[in-house]
Length: 228
Image (cartoon, rainbow, N blue to C red; front, side, top):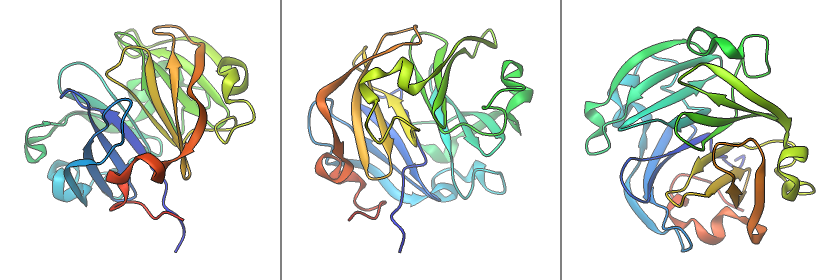
C-alpha cells in the first residue's frame, strides 16, 4: 500500500485546533504548539460523513488545499475548483457552501495565467486577508479580499532555510498556527515548523532547527495516515 500524504489542512477558529485532510478522510485535532499532537477531537471519518454538504462536489473524494479566513469560513480546493464554506466547527453537519464550487479563476481572477490557475498545493494565511499560495517550487503572496498578487517567488529564494530539505521543491499542505509568527508545513512523511513574517512574502527560519518525521510528533494522525 502506498504511503498516504496530507492533502490539505487549515486552522480552525477554535483555539489550537486544525482540520487535516488525507485522501477522502479528515480529522480534527489539537495541534498544541510546541508539544506532541496526540489529541484527536473528531474523526477520522469520511469527508462526506462529516460534511454532507460536500457530497457530489469535487471535494467529496479529497481536498488538495485549504486556508481559513475570518470567523468560521475557509476556502477549499480540489484540482482547478474551489469553494468558500462555513465549516461550522461545533457541528460540521451544519456546514454550508457560500460560494462555488467553481473554477479557481472565477473567484480569484488575479491567478489567471499563473501556475495556480489549475490547482494549488498548499496555502498559509499570514496576516488579515493575505495568504501564501504554493505550487510546485513556486509560491505567491495573494490578498484574497482585493483579489491581487503582491509577490511571486521560488521557495528556494523566499524560504532559504528550506533549501536542501524535502520542501525546497514543493509543499503538500500547510496551516498557520495560533502563534502569530509560526506555520506548519508538510510533505510526504515529513513536517517542519517555520517562521512566517506576517503579511510579507519572505519566510523566516526553520523553528527547531530541523525537519522531522510526522509520526514523531503527530500521533493523532496515525489513524488516517500510513507511516513507515
